[in-house]
Picture 1: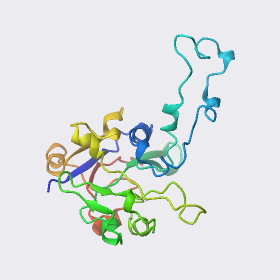
Picture 2 (picture 1 turned 60 degrees about the vertical axis):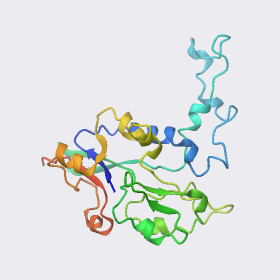
Picture 3 (picture 1 turned 90 degrees about the vertical axis):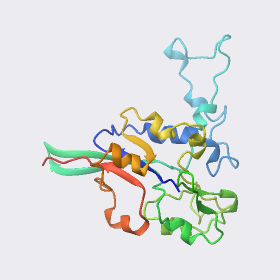
Picture 4 (picture 1 turned 180 degrees about the horizontal axis):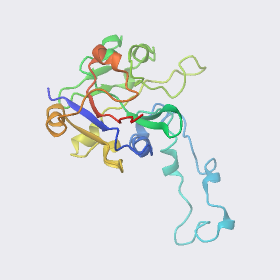
Length: 238
C-alpha cells in the first residue's frame, strides 16, 4: 500500500481559511444534510444580494438574468472536514503570537475510527492510504467520534437531537480528485502554499526536516493512531 500524507507548513499559513471554504465547496454534495435540507434557496438567500442603493451590479439585469444562489449553499455545509484553529501565545506585547493550525483527517496508519465501527462503514483503502466512510452504512452510533483523538468524524447536528440521526461524514483525502490527477481542494486552493499531499516517502525527501510536531498539535496522541501528517512548525521567539 502506498501511504499518502498531508504536509502543513505552519510558517507559511496565513490563517485565511481558504482551505476550509474550498473543502466545503468541493464536497458540498457529500455533506450529511445535502439530501435532507437545502440550506439556502433563492428565497432564503435573498439577503445576500447587493443592495440596490449600491449602484451598478446591484440588481439582476436582462443580460445576466437572476442572481443564482447555488454557490452560496456550498459554503453552508454544517460539517467541517478541514478546520483551521488559532492558538494564542504570550500575555503582553510585543511578546504575543496568534498561530494557525490547519487540519483535516490524518488518514492514520492505525485509525481508531476503523477499529471501533460496529458495521464496518469505515475502511482504509490501499491506493492512497485514505480512510473513507460509506455513510449509507453508518448507524450514527458515535463510536468513531468518541475514539478519534483528532475530532475528524463529523455530524451535521448532535446525535441527541430530535429527528433522524445524521450519518457520519469526513475528509476522504479528496479521493475523487486524486483519481483525476488533481490535488485535494484544500491543497490546490491554499494561497500561501502551506499545504501538500504526497506519498510519505516523497515528503521525507522534499522536507527532510519535517516532523510530526507543530504548535497546537496533540503530540501525546500521535502514538495512538500513527497519523500521516508532517509539519514545519512555527517558532516562537519569546
